[in-house]
Length: 396
Image (cartoon, rainbow, N blue to C red; front, side, top):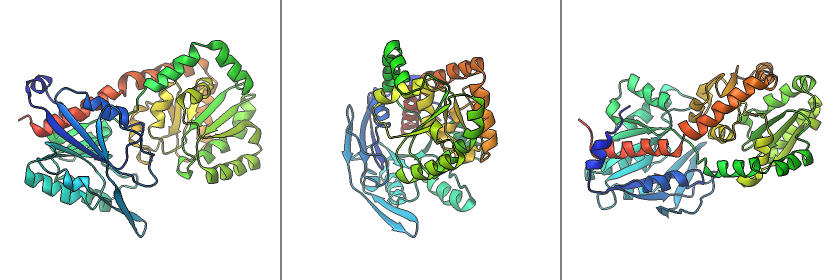
């Protein structure tokens, strides 16, 4: 993966006009675009859509943005999408570099790439670069479309390295390690830690001071396999007195299913479903009161949210079914993995962390460092800027 020479960056006097197309503008992405727009020599404008069943759009503060309606239809089970900026922005009148969503469900993607090349606009495809259900039928068309772009921008290093090892030109490959803004997390965390009396009162009121606490925070979805966590609770409750499992997230249907499993296993009293909590200040005392964060499968940015609170993370060892952010987890360093789909192995991993305070403390320290120093907004934006400058003025 090629890094763009910082000396060459400083020599470029003309601003680079950058257009980014995205399906939505979620809260976790806004700090990234704001930080990128603040980079010297980058004139950024975001064009985002209103895709259904995606995170809600937030206000663009600190950077220029425009919401453009996204058309979506269903062909059998597959979405077919047209987003006008993919075509309209492929012009020198609009930008010098165009960053597009790397998703073949967009019918507007290939026409936009072809038009951009004809008009001399440099293109960057930004995305995962793989599917959780990877196959030749999925990778072949994705890679054919990728060949039309000037650069590929990946969410993590291992996927980028895989492309290079497969024969792709390293000069076209970049990484912007996906992350979230830690500022609101650290502000909320410090607020409560600076008020130990209030925090202790919160723990007492919510009965979190009587034993160990496991926490899960995310949307309640069958793919996250919370049923495996519940299946581990009977053995864990016998081993650890007054163990509490806190589940925070939206999803009424899945919550009912999980509640039924808990009742059947006789652990209803040790698990609490709180519903969604979106305010970081309100969420913080729950996270601080926990000993570990368990996300049995399909983990994504939640891992960095947990790490920001210094929480060790336990999740499945089947990385191919996880999201790109799984690369932030180092087994026995900032968390643990267990053998996929086996509740007894999950039980063993949780027991190992809860039963060893020194080990848990070590994991916690490394988790916090991972979130605040390694997977930072700055490092992510560095990767995006390198891709932009490298595509506009390629290094020989």
